[in-house]
Image (cartoon, rainbow, N blue to C red; front, side, top):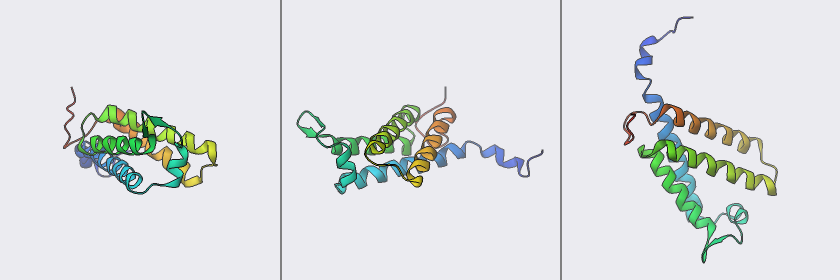
Length: 133
C-alpha cells in the first residue's frame, strides 16, 4: 500500500531526536525528583545499601540524571540507552520483589524500554554530539 505522505520520510532522522529528547527529559526529571525528595519507595528499595560510607539512593539519582543528560544532548547515546535500560529493569525488578507492580508501571517500563531499544538501533538523530560512522 502506498503511503499517504511519502515526503515525510525525508524527515525520518527527526524521529530519533524526538524520542531521545523525551526519554532524556524523563530520566532527568526522575533523577531530580528522587534527588530532591527522599522518596520512601525509592529509599526502601535500596535500604542498607552503601558505596563506601555513602548511601546508594542519592548516588543512583545522580547516575540517573547523568544518563538523562547524555540522552538529552545526544552524547554517547547508544551507551546511555543500554545503561538506562539496565537501570529501568533493575529498578523494576527490585520493586516487583516488594510489591506487585501496577498496570501503569509495567507498561511504562515496556514503553521506555521500546524507546531505548529504538535509540540503540536508530542512533541519536539530528542535533546530537554522536556522529554515525
